[in-house]
Length: 403
Image (cartoon, rainbow, N blue to C red; front, side, top):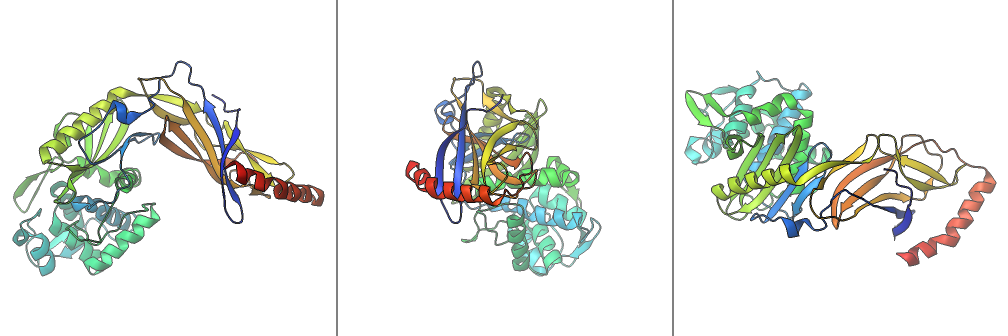
């Protein structure tokens, strides 16, 4: 499907450039869409976010950017730091760490919380600690890893926040490795889903541990705390959490018919309700959506204006085909806008990222895809640059009035 009817629809005045959105409304013919997902489906969770992993399509969203207490879901970030250290060779699965009194008292048997019952002053391998944290949600395992890698848990929390920003988590703050309550520790479901996608993509050899049903260590048998693994929905991860303020939460991942879905929920009333709602949403997603190709690989998705170049515009493309999942009920229209900061200034290289293709299903933003220049644009001659300057001075105020 080729997007050819691009019209100026929006801009915001900035310095030194303006942000433009080139919009196209794509008629869907026989394709069925849902104009208002909330009218068709809802959940008891106070916050919810579900995406399809391959296309990045947002299938359901309910206050996903509200900041909540993560509880044990903070351990996803703890494991990201550990996996990154393993991948970069800083540590190995055989590296041994000693159980400190702080780890034993705060997260071990005396604490009364989730624990792998590590013995005080014993030595445990990172490989066993990873299984203890993921399968048993072991607080002592988290603290042992944090102290072993960073020297102290506060230093490890600094590493967690630094890595969170590096991988694109924008709104979350971590204070400890366990998720134990702290007024400064907050996350959003948007960030948790992004983190779940990142872990699966970057560390597949370690991600498999999230699907492990049980772990016996030190002659103690414990089952994985994730209820989804035993609900026959194709689940393979990832974690659960609970605080009095945020209620019961979960980050779940499951695959059906070759498609991978990731769900985050928070604000549920009980562990039973958490499991039931998560299963219901996964089963709804399996039935309610079908894939649609929007643009083929290398197909032009729009054109951006260029200042001072041999050409006044440059075609834009995505690196891969653009597809998303669309609802199989209720007809509507699919809207797409290319948003970029412009006009772009020559010279431009080919395959230079300059903006984003945003696609809406009804009023809901369903997908964002980076777009790149399809060709290089060299700097134009003095006359061309002068004409562009005059044009920009003459039309910039008009664009401002149209906003």
